[in-house]
Image 1: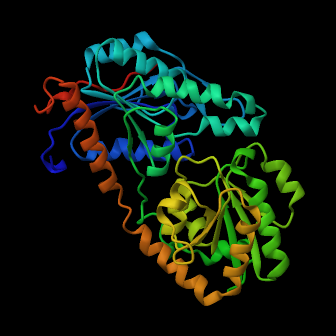
Image 2: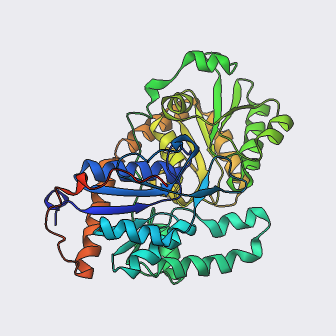
Image 3: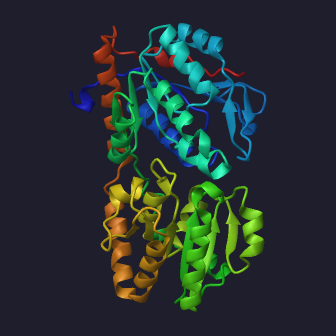
Length: 404
């Protein structure tokens, strides 16, 4: 069935992270919620209460639940397992389908509640928790974490992942009903036209200088030491090279002290973030723990030469030597050598930057959301849910937000 002929649905979306929190999952969830609403569906968003929410009721269509800070992740919270509250919400405003984006306590409660009242459930695999554990002294827990994740996702009607490679990996590990829900990029926001000469001057850059940029969490699981090693190698060879790191995290203060030649400018969002991207030239992304890596496509859309390992978003969208650089996973020497060679060849570097922007222009969020919409309808048809094809025009008047 073509997506334009699909009837509106009432969709429950449960996530433990959402803007203004800054991370790839929060950004994806905002695109998912606004995209589905823009296609005529009524979205009932359940998320933890954030500091910015105050004590009042949540925004219309949002249900705020209690949460607690995540240790080591400043500004992020996980939701408490409010099973009965979810049962009550869904008894009053029964969704046709529930999408559970995160596997924290709130996500587990949502899966259990939806199954208990026979609402179809789709889960999202957004974060490689089993990979993160290796960077926090918990390597022995990797396989138990995989088993826990598999048990969680296999209780849903379908699991959505961002890349075909991850789908193959999870299928091999025993996950069932795994499908690809890719990621788009906002090419209006992330645009080379946002290059800001004043910002570059603040970084100490002249017209002919190059900026090696990193955007992301300043933390061990992002392989941040390799980004810094690469920046040092570039600076040692090229006098006109400046190094800028955008983001925050537990390693920021220590690394800023030990790398005084690099600028650590903190976390940025919106147009300010877009200006930082566009004011760079090279984008270094050495992480090996991504399920996708939205920053890769954001950097491509901004016209940067992206240097990354060959997996996740980089594997999906970069063609080595054509619109970016790929290194074999875990090969630090190749990661550094590739970008050093590219900077030596300035004409080729500029061609790859232009090709990166061109490739990103095809990654429309509208197309991605249309594919998700069809997947949700497929789940409903497979479950034989009643009323899937009827309109729910009056649904929007039923929810006005629910403060917790």
